[in-house]
Structure formats: structure tokens, C-alpha cells
Length: 158
Image (cartoon, rainbow, N blue to C red; front, top):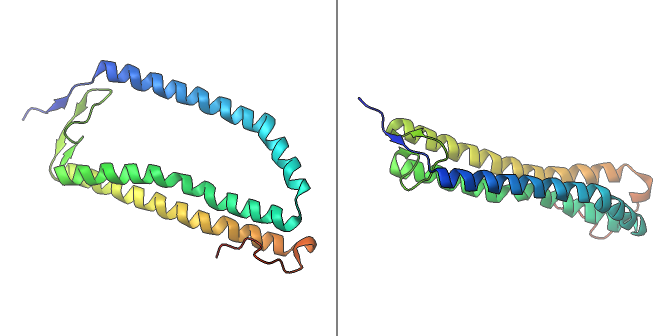
């Protein structure tokens, strides 16, 4: 039996590599700017706050950062469900950047389920991290003398 091959779209490949290169350069520039200017500014800002306010800000930040993975989880989940529904990998209408052998039937469904499982696992880990990091930060703060006095609404998310 001859394998069905989905041919690469060369224009799409060039656009994809260009977009990824631009995204990588932008991310590197953003990280560099954050390290050079953002870190000293944030440290100075935190030093001007009362310990309870600084703890509250860090608690919310440590809770929100892991949640940024949820949109990626949603995209992976959506793609996996589409593969399961069509029983075809890659799903119909998908453009690819290299020649890809089309898998149909049980093999495609297995890959779709793997993607769904990966998405759900990553989402669960993200949610657990969003709960655990603030909890550990508050436990660490509770062991410090300056945080011993009770603070109203001191940032516990649990």
C-alpha cells in the first residue's frame, strides 16, 4: 500500500521560520531589557513597599505567571480533539512545513489522545504551580520575623 504524503507548503515554511525568528529576537530583546532595567526597578519598588504589601505583590505574581501556559494548553487540546474527531493526522486543511506522511485510523486517534493528555497534564501542572508557589512563598514569609504580626489579607490565595 502506498503512503499518502501531505506536501510541504514552501511559502508557509518561509513565513513560519521568519515569524519564529522575529519572535525569538523579540523575546531575547524583551528578556534582556527586563534583566537590565526591569529587575533593578522592581527591586527598588519592592524596597519602598511595606513587607506585607511586597509579599502580596509577589504572591499574586507567583500565582499568575504559571497561568500563562493555559492558552498553549487550550491550543494543544483543540488540535488533539480535531485529530481524534477526524481520525486523521495531520487533520484535513492543515498546512505543513515539511513533507508529512498522513496517518489515518487508530494511529491518528492515538496521537490525538496523546496530545489531549499532554494538554490536560500541562494545564494541571500549571494550576498546581499557581497554587503551590504562593503557598510556599507565604510559608517562607511566615518564618521571617518581619512577617510574624498578622496582616489582614496578606496574600494567601488558598
